[in-house]
Picture (cartoon, rainbow, N blue to C red):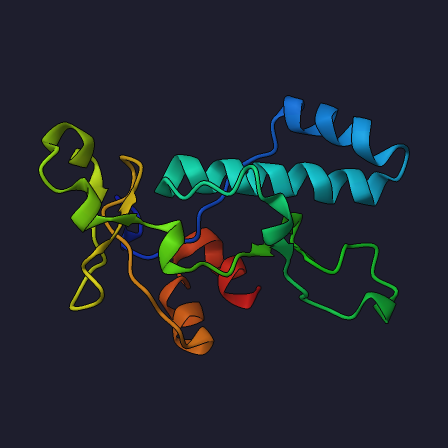
Length: 160
């Protein structure tokens, strides 16, 4: 991503929970505030992931798992996946979750907006990233990934 004040940097997909996600969570979680919040945020995370990358797990929400950032027994009023009023989730992806360059080749209209990873990584795996982003990369080492996203959101995402 490129932003005037931060320059080029890496970031995680994210955004806000919309009203319809809270309304859907209300129907399935009853009066449990924390369950409603996590359910609505999980749906929002899947929606934002789709909007920003084209990866669609909106019909497979159990794959979007709350990230465990602390032990629930700390007495904190925050949820275990909450940091600075943000909820964090993880998603294990496989090659099948991505668009394939081989499948998209030959259809220039369908290829529009799809990009492969930055660098010399598996070029067959493609994402349809949103306009505010310029590329993506695979980083299996969590410490390296955390350092890569340090400029995003004042470092909150790095610490999560």
